[in-house]
Image (cartoon, rainbow, N blue to C red):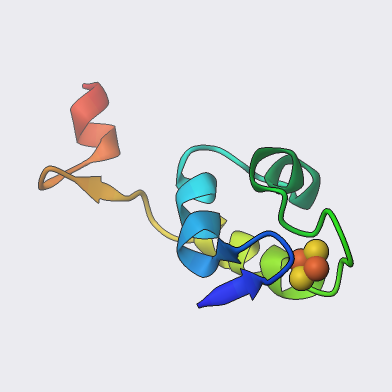
Length: 70
Ligand code: FES
């Protein structure tokens, strides 16, 4: 779903950014443009970012990231 209409940023893009280490709205704005115009999406974007950051490590290729680093 689109979170930021002004910059066509979706919840998936926010979750991907979080998985890549983005941890603040300011950082998300720099990376995606989300919340960089009217700002009406800021609260929802921040909530999705917080939710995504609170999740367990993402699983890629069937192995948790922690296992891949070992
Ligand atoms: S809806 Fe995100 S900046 Fe306007």
